[in-house]
Each structure stands twice: as structure tokens, then as C-alpha cells.
Length: 310
Image (tube, rainbow, N blue to C red; front, side, top):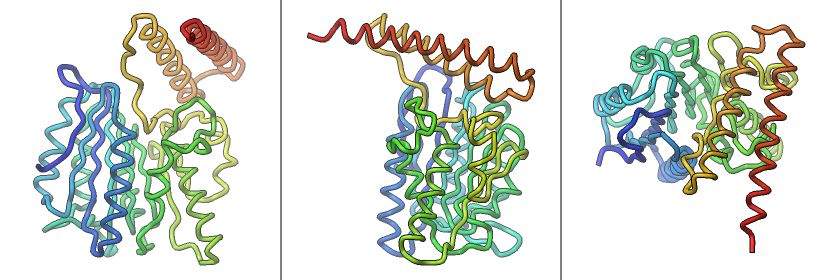
């Protein structure tokens, strides 16, 4: 089989996630790549989403690009396209290449793939060495590009290991809404990488980058103090979540409550993303109203859960 997929059929998809693992070079790298990809595959499944996992050690550039292009038409206009690379990359000063069987995937290949998206949000997470070279090639409006390393950092990075752990890590969920956003996963993984090097007493050889809509770039540890990061406002990465929206519940009452909660959370996310368009007082008044509505719904859900307990 060329790829593994988890599918919701018969309707347009809200998200398609393409996870590509590359050539390992050594067995220990291969085991790590497979483990990280499996964790992400499991976290990304659910709801109206599809997850495709492709092993670039046995599949060629043309096969990978063809499989990716075939999926684009299945995505709803307001959906999300995620592309995650786990493996080795290199940069010769002109071209970035992701190492796979046969001819490598290049920055130009990936840029053309993104150009085929008309409307959906795009997220690229490059968990490879020299990944920073992808940022200028892929950045743009309605896109988030995460690179595990700067363009001249050639050591295999630890970043994808911690990124794969983020969906299940309570400490990654900074706003405690029971979901981990791309921004939260980035900050969590970057901090874990820094801690690892510090505890090992080694010079840090990788520094992650996040470029948001070609407008905001986070590339230093002190980015945590920026208003956009602290409040999650104005950043697309703050409203793109690693786990998809929950699928429908089995009972009508549960389904109705879940749909209402998802709707309110989406309104909160959209408001935060567009904060700059509102006067400050109006923004916070609207945010407070939505938060109160969300809290009331969660209280109703807790009351219903208590009623069914023996």
C-alpha cells in the first residue's frame, strides 16, 4: 500500500493531514520517525478529517505528489490542509530537499502543492534538519509554516519528538480549553528542546521557527512575552488545532451540546484572530459574552453527566 488513511466518506472534509516520513539512514532514526508519525496520525484522526501517512523510504516523489494532489479537491473551502515532514532535510544554499526514495522532494515541489489550494488554510510542519530554508519558500497569507531548525542547522532535530508528544501533554494546553493549538504545540516543543540541551549540558544545535501568514514570525525564546502569543490573538496558529473538532455524539442531546460548544469555540477563535479589526472595548465585551455562553454550556454538560451517574 502506498499510504495509510483514516477517512470520513460522503462529504467534504474539514481537514486533510498528510504525514510524510523520509529516508532514515540509520535504524534508530527510522524507529523514531515511525513512532513520531504514528503519534501524530492517532492525534489527528476524528471528526470530518482524513489522515494520510506516506513512507518516503519506499514511495517516490511523483507518487507522493500525485497522492497529495488527489486529496486537495476533497477539502471544503474553509477547511485546513496540514503537511508534516518527519525525516532528514538538506539545503545547498539554493534548494531545500527532503530526503526520500529516488529524487528528493524540493521546496519548489511543496510550493507548487500549496499553490493548488484555493481558500483552505495551510499548515506546514517541517520536522527536519535545514527546515528553515522552507520558510521563505512557503510563507504566505492564510498559511503557517513551522520549521524545526534554521536553514544552516544540519543536525537531526529533537523538535518533532516533542511536537508528537504535544497533543497528549497537559502542559502544552496553555489556555486550558482541552485542545492543543499549533501555537501551543510549537511553544511546548521549543521549550522542551531547550530544556533537553540544557539538562544534557550541550550547546543547542536547533532553533525552531514559526511564520504566521507572512506577517508574524516567532524565532526566539522571548517570543513568549509577545501579546499575540500570551493572548492567542491575531495568530492563525492559535486557532489551528492538532486534534480535529469532535465527531458527532451518539445521543441527540449530547450531539446538540457538542455542536453548540464547537460553534461557540469557533466564534471565540475567529474573534481572537480578527482582534485588530475591533475597538478594544467592543472586542472584550464580545469575548466576555462568548466566554459566559461557553461556560454555561459546559455547566449544562456537567449537570447532564451527573444525572446519568448511578
